[in-house]
Image (cartoon, rainbow, N blue to C red; front, side, top):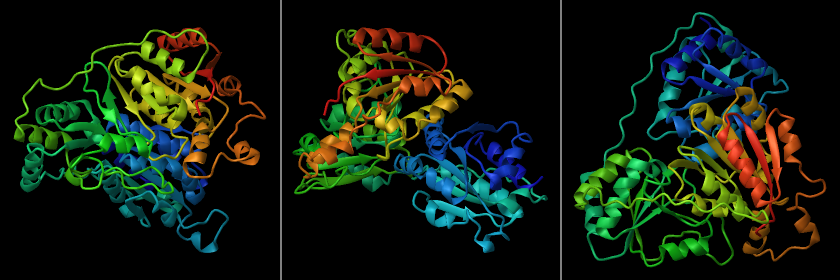
Amino acid sequence: MNGAQALIRTLVDAGVDVCFMNPGTSEMHFVAALDDVPEMRGVLALFEGVATGAADGYSRIADKPASVLLHLGPGLGNGLANLHNARKGHTGVVNIVGDHATYHKQYDAQLESDIETVARNVSSWIRTSNETSSLAADAAEAVAVASGPPAQIATLILPADVSWTEGAEPAEALPARTPEPVADAVLARITEVLQGDEPAALFVGGRACRADALVQASRIANTTGAKLLAETFPARIERGAGRVPVERLAYLAEFASMQLDGLKHMIVVDSKSPVSFFAYPGKASDLVPEGCTVHTLVGQAGDPLEALTALAEAVGATEANETIQPEVRPDLPSGPLTADAVCQAIGALLPEDAIVSDEGNTSGLFAAGHTAGAPAHDWMCLTGGAIGQGLPVALGAAVAAPDRKVVVLQADGAAMFTLQAWWSMAREELDVVTVIFNNASYAVLNMELNRVGAAEGGAKAKEMLDLHRPELDFVALATGMGLSATRATTAEEFNEQFAAAVAKKGPSVIEAIVPSIM
């Protein structure tokens, strides 16, 4: 075997059997080795940001890392935004970056760069494999780090000659890491707090937003009178009819402060205490109320289900006292098409066991409310705030769960960052329905213009937040990449088009022409 063959065999044997990629010359031996290890599925992306976002989405649904293959430092740079989102969402990714041959680096060729420095922005583990004999062992360690807990981004830098040199052997997978247990003293202290008289809240995130963990959290809240809140943008929250409903912390700091007002204790589970998304003149960055003590039950290195189960037992929570969301669907809308009407129709028609990738931004504000009582489904949020996540994350989720319908709620401006994901969806024949909210603006920035104290802004400022001249034609863009696409301008048209899209298999796009709500 050469290094690339041993690398891929090691990845597959460790359970990493999907690689999203945009390769170049330095990675050609990795590409060639795909034929020698057929268990590895390669998925081509036309832009590195699509590959990294897809690896994130795959990992969120599969609960194991995907790998991604990037070309040198510029390729890593192109994929950095969605690796940032994956890092903030605590998603495991084995990030393989090809490099020049070890003996070629001294010549400072055109694509030479300091890859480790670029990778350090998003990676908790970085290693350059300079010897073919150690490459497979490095790969096994990268998988173990990415798998966690905590799940992380592990970046393996792969020089071309290390990849093509023969004499390599696969390495055995490393044992899974054991989650850190909750200390008895921590459990006792939090039990005492919850059984006391002072107002408290359970603040859950990460894996604590899965259905089983939320059952335990709801039992604790109902037994103790604590408030149950989820982080603003969880990587994956299991919600809908038959599951525990959870109020998410508001994006706007003013509303979040109202939700947290009066608390004396906050018990954080697989998250961190909340802070404002941005700094605003004259407003606090830390959203924890003054006089409120933060207690961490379990962090990313622990097991939130195990910790919440232990806490439920400690506070005397009984089985079957959790709050369950009944199935309640809105009526189909009629009349003019608005963002609210689109979300109402989605709530009325969302199929059971769907996966929703939400990057609707301002237009998607109504979606959570209208879908709360829809059949059980998973909801994926924009974890790190770097737009251009919605389509790639949906691509990865569809690869991870080919038997489930994936629905993307996608803002128009953010779509243009990673629109190439549509081409990969068509190529892989993935079952993804994209709903484009076309309001021809970066609407959220119109809101932020005022919130940061920059006043309304004049004509030049508003021009920078406007997507007219020329108009974006998402139907033409989608059909040009091999997807079926329609345009809706009334609620009745959207109802019909969305119902048809979720009833058939394969990728499709609905462009919803809506007014801006900002």
